Length: 247
Image 1 (tube, rainbow, N blue to C red):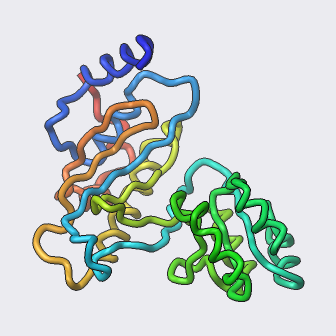
Image 2 (cartoon, one colour):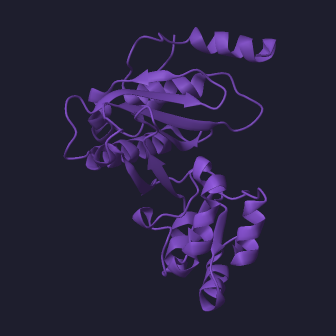
């Protein structure tokens, strides 16, 4: 860690209690108080669940369109042929192809955020799991990225629809915007994500569902959020998040 980054970390840590769980609005206010980096950092939400992900029925996987987007243009690759390929291009897909695109990906090309495929392309795309799987970019019918409705899938992806899933430690990691967003926009995205995770709770889940929630920026420390205070967001006036003052 460079001394510059170390000082920034130290200055940021001085602004809050690392063991305390903050109300969502105050947590957002805190991360926006951290010293600025040289770029508009991504704000990330990390949700540690009590799920036993060794059981298939306790693994979370789905998609969500955050109300205020992610602050970036999503890059979309589509594996399709003929008319479906033309639909993808007309819908604004950035990379479109069939065997040629698959060969390019097999050689290591992954310069896109989302991959979509028509069902007839899956025998080819299925062989790309070694490349796309570890990056969470493998098309999957469960999240709408294996479909014949290419125009809809591309449109939703370009608008910021993103996939979430539990990792092997039962944690969901997802960006919720940029540090340069208004606090209210970050709060609305945060609330939408938590609501979706609550909605997706497996029927087989036992015990406490959400253990911890942490908000952080790309280069900043994590601020713990009180899971019990999530519903406060919908009742707080829009200005509340801006009114929290860090001593």
